[in-house]
Length: 82
Image (cartoon, rainbow, N blue to C red):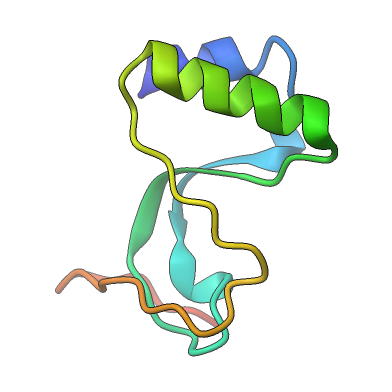
């Protein structure tokens, strides 16, 4: 994931990319373990770049929108969300 992270940084601000981000911070139910990489694109061009980069590296992606009405699996050693 580190290589993909570095590649994404070439076109996306580091403030928009989070590594091991607890998904409980982004879901309406406030549950969910960490995403390997969580990205908040600012525009359609960034979204296209993210999708292209993921596809080139065979990394699955999930678009969550506002995070409402989705469940993300927690891990046993989950981080606390506030």
